[in-house]
Image (cartoon, rainbow, N blue to C red; front, top):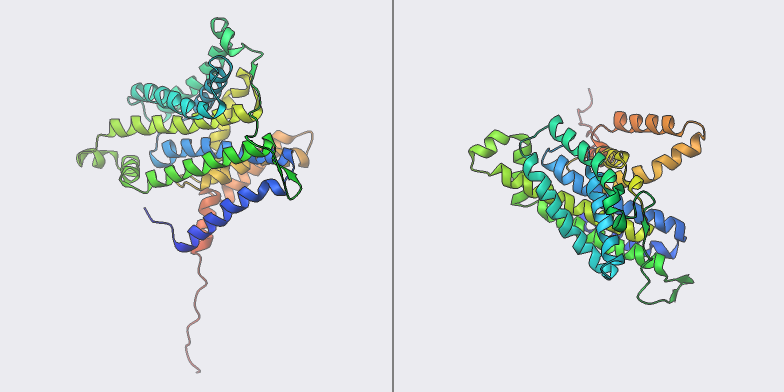
Length: 330
């Protein structure tokens, strides 16, 4: 894997600085949308690690999103955990759940694995509604949690440092940390092994790679990322209901991964922007047919950028104008 160039490091630093300064020029609602972009970017990144890098197709990551969200809510409401401790706790819980699901899924591949994860996405919301668990999950009506307060409040350039600003910066910090971890993961030996298993599984096994261990491990890591996103979403929205984690959530994550670009860490941000803002754009174009407009816009994105937005940007970066040769005068 290639290392970041000096220009790429500068660009990443500028992007992080701009994201930190965003609350100074953004109202609370837009800041909430920005937090949603970061949250879905983490979830799409987790899915990309599994599907884009390792080739295991999942259409059920909304289930891990729900497990992370409810883990954070239950730990806060019933166990009295501080909100910031629910993030690593949800990560650990989803890691275990991902590993437990990934082990039997080793016998499945391709569309069979997709069908198994699809079944998981259908089952989890129903389990959350189940009467035996409603004491903790709230059943179909759901549960609410208190908004985490800012550790301190002050004004900077006329902008109040309130709970909304703090939640955004808290989410941003975790996003940067997870993207850094994912980048180091995929550009090292483990990342090369995952790609080898995806592209040439028989050759990888012939070279002594234990594909079962790596597939199970990446399934757990992928669930960990998605569970952290779910926990952050619970803190940001402050309300959870089983119907919020419907099957289409998994589909939206898959759409974000494909449109953003598979097999690239930064592409998750572009995919998250699409799934957060494209429905609003479609609704503004047509109030009566927002679903149809949304579908048409997705088709256009895939048609003109078959390798995703990141792939199109990478191709544009590598584009060079042909040099004119001096053939001399005739």
